Image 1 (cartoon, rainbow, N blue to C red):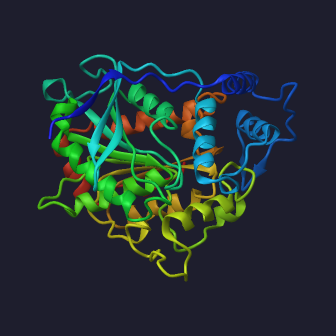
Image 2 (cartoon, rainbow, N blue to C red):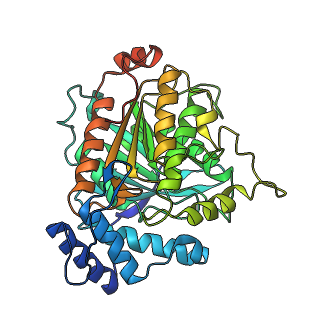
Amino acid sequence: MPLRRSTRQAPPPKLELRGRLERQSLRALGATGGPNRRVRLRRPIRLDGQTLDAPTQAMLALRDRLGYPAWHEQPVPQARATMRHEALVAAGRPIAVAAADDLEVDGATGPLPARLYRPGGARNPALTWQPAADRLPLLLFFHGGGFVLGDRDSHDAVCRLLCSAAGILVLSVEYRLAPEHPWPAAPEDGLAAWWWTVDHAEELGADPERLAVGGDSAGGNLSAVVAQDAARGRGRDEDVAPAAQLLLYPAVDFTRRYRSRDLFSRGFYLEDASMDWCEHLYLGVEGEPGAVDREDPRVSPLLGDLAGLPPALVVTAGFDPLRDQGEAYAEALVEAGTPAVCRRMPDLIHGFANTPGVGRRSREAMLEVASLLRGMLEIEPAVRARAATAAPESSASTA
């Protein structure tokens, strides 16, 4: 099926006046790294041997002062609007890319909205090994939001940053959300979007041998599930695994409660009650009729077959309830013989990929992520294939 592309480029999402004023306040906090007249920081927050980034701490204090409600305290439509608003405020000034085109890709039951970001220049000077016909690596990106919230606009900043800094194409695809579409709608759409990307790689200007999958939080879950399904040929007579998987603070295990969830369950953006709210809307309440089995690998990919999967970059945040399960996933990949690198950003919170406009650390962290991803994708396909079938030389690291 030919590409269904918008007739005009998608401009960066716009903020209303209130959001622009809030963004100015955040910019002031980020520039000073400390308090201003409106927000006074208490002593630095130190927990579990980590110190929270000062501008991030100030952002959390400003959120409290502005009275942002938690996700679970709002009706679903309002929670979606709140998340989008907060993400645009924290994004800062739009990051320039050569083009951002809205289009549609095939989902499991119908078309899905998507946005294709293209970096400047036909060739990518960051890559030491250039693909044929000036084709670039492509990252198929799934947004976070607990399977309930999020869209292309809420994650526009992170996609622009990855596109620009890594010098790759980024295809951000929306998927059906709960509660209107509970599990398994999201992983079915994710896998369908993967196969669509494989089929349309050349039309997108992508190198078919350098198609990666990635996402943050719930999107990291979907990316891990898609990587497993694609490697096993689910939905196809052939298996075409991604070249790499980028998992930003992923939710990978719904079967147990990890220590980091108890440590950071309140006050660090992702609230414990909001996590339960999203889980129940997506999977149902355990023990009640219709509830989904949490041990299904397409729910909890940590419980899946992790051997022979694409190389993974797992990124966690120090002050994140999901930290420990993400790091457990990286360790499990290595134990199964799948190459994996785990990088913890010890001074940041869940969602930092969406906050490049808050201080320096979030942007610096994502620039590091882009560099690591670029390094994974610049390896020649034949070399990468051999690496994926061999035991990794080093274990997962949180350094």
